Length: 213
Image (tube, rainbow, N blue to C red; front, side, top):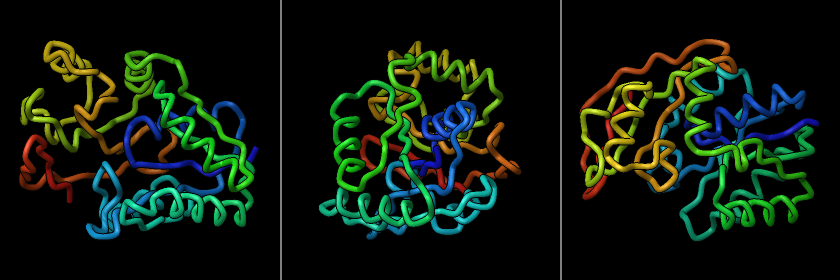
């Protein structure tokens, strides 16, 4: 089935894209939610230049959906309608086990006539991280909750040593509670790797992020 990938630029949506392709489905485009005020993608903070780089590296057109938050559901549905016009019959999401998120996305698909897919559903949080590492994906740690995790994780790639740091800190190794966010940089679904350069560390209360250039 042809599908649109709801894409955050992070590890989970990248693994979901991988699984959909491995299952024989054909991606027609990416859909990225963009914070209108910040002109960056929600949660992972990719700026317009970086989003263009993702579009090229993955070889897929990207539908950007600006939102101020209050209209998030409407913006996503508008993006899904555009994806249907490009030939998408289904929409894939990277959720693992959060029921409320899945129900919300299923509603968006129901309203736009698309079949929802959740290729990571109930596969286990640690299992998803292990699969990413086994497949050779390189995912850079972009932000951390600094009440739980050291800033030394910022700008390094998620590997087994980093997973052990997460585990020892009592954090969810998949970051499903917002402990950290990543930017995927390379792996089987990439036509070419993304070369990131780490900039300064930015601090926002309980969270720290590294500027990626």
